[in-house]
Amino acid sequence: MPKGAPRSVALVVAAANEIATKPYKWGGGHGAWKDSGYDCSGSVSFALAGGRLLDSPLDSSGLTRYGAGGAGRWITIHSNPGHVFMTVAGLRFDTSGQGSAGTRWQPASRSTGGFTVRHPPGL
Image (cartoon, rainbow, N blue to C red; front, top):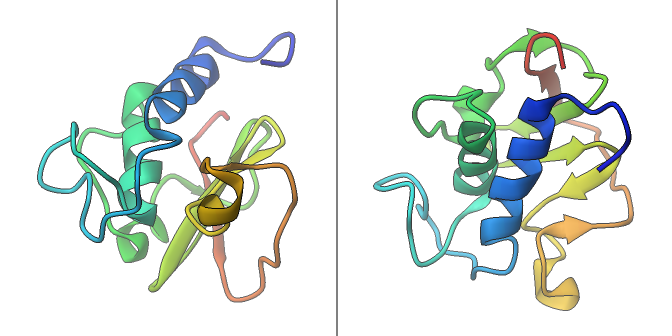
């Protein structure tokens, strides 16, 4: 965690780490926070909830309206009706690529064309 990161960011990372290697499961994380697997929006929702930034899961369309517009300093959410991922302190948390990397945390960036960019207010 970078020096000076707000506590809520550390909590988002801790929650994301809890599920980073869980399998992809369509609809996972939407019926219950604790699930056997998570889809893209369930993953992002779970991590944000861990940072006390979200009360209930949102699907990828819902996350296109979450928070404030534009990139955040610490957390940026990229969402469209079919997929969502976020960057937290410079690392991408994304179900795409998990199969080859074994984790939702991805070191490489990806194209953000076609995604709405949002962030938790203040972050």
